[in-house]
Image (tube, rainbow, N blue to C red; front, side, top):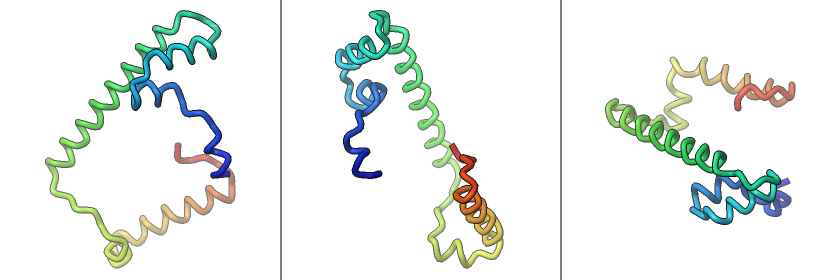
Length: 105
């Protein structure tokens, strides 16, 4: 499965936002949409990128305001108040794998 993913093309959003290839993205959208009017899609991608950047900036500011340190795996297993939530989360993941339900998107 992982080897076959190397042959798949990347999304137009990736090329537009990460690589800044505006003309290539317009050409690809025109080809796939079979229309010359792709400006609405391009402005929507720009708007989504700006919203994601604003959300990431707000999350970074919130993280700086609180003094939280990440747990190591050993600390997580040793903390008695976190064992039950960890067990529940792991159990839900195992059940999800066996049931085929996509609970986390």
